[in-house]
Length: 506
Image (cartoon, rainbow, N blue to C red; front, side, top):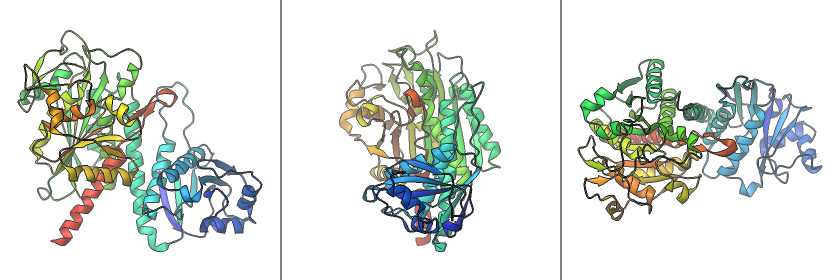
């Protein structure tokens, strides 16, 4: 979506629609007070008469705006002023953009810049405006014979009063726009059916990103023959029962001087459909197992955002892509496989396959001598029992890295929660016949899954994000969420900022 930033009197702004944030009780923001005065107290009268309830998330279109340059105004409730912080602000934005994209207009203006939020500047608010707008225009109806008309909204103008803040607001809007598009790309990949979005399809998407990047992204695809020669027996074992060939997808972004900065690596679980293999899942809701590649999808979405923002970082993106199916060649419970690292694994449950593809991808990441490695996976149902659908599970072998990711999640409002990774949990992975088992029983399932991965991440700072509870919605709202693209992109931007500070101190 296009955007522009203007310093102007909002009452004189000529626009098809002006979004106006209003607190419950009529406590006007400065920009809203100007609008109210210029329109002969139109907004105040609507509140006093009870024609508009400014409860959080309520919206009301006023089709005529006498005295204003806007053709119409869209009132957006912020709720009670003292309770309006990040969560309320984002909820109000989402409601506003959902209503806005239904209007027959191709552009609109927004005056959310002076909503006071603790420790959040105008750039952050601009970023969230653009993210909300991108999410609101998203549609996934390419498989419907009669799709609904696409939203016509194509441009937003952010009106602010502080001319000195224009550069920061523009940068915030640019980042928000890029992240929003990355989120939508992730949602599309996640929503695609398993008969379309296969490991080969993901490889093709990576190659397309490389072509579109004008040389900024180097792409390498390792097919089954290359993986066999490499010794990636664990990754290959998961796809043995499928006709769809397994792929390891590697995308390299060189934003800093070559060899000057060690790369940060993101690793995504790309199980494009998960039947559970021989340990077959129940039939109910198995259709949602097309979302088991949402870790990979979030890596692709982050690549999309990075290519738009162009941070001065060296990055490597790795996707381990396979389909977990039960045929005569499939891995069986009790089988012992050999990983790329050389460790042997007794497969006690073939439905614990995500860790089997990720362990070889983590070993592969070691060759880049990374500054950090973060893997993202819809790994365990246990994380939903523990954290529900609000927070992503976070486990790490490095407390500083964990704190960096937690901070990024707070900044992006894409939050995670830190779980322990103590040595005591490792005992649950002991095997009578191999170096370790691929499951550790029901207790602490999310933690023991991360313990398994930690055995393959002992030479670099590593963190694991379990997004099984946050990557998609079920029920009437079924669909991929695009998380945690916001968190991941913010984490990388923070690393760029740290590098700039370090370089300036030298």
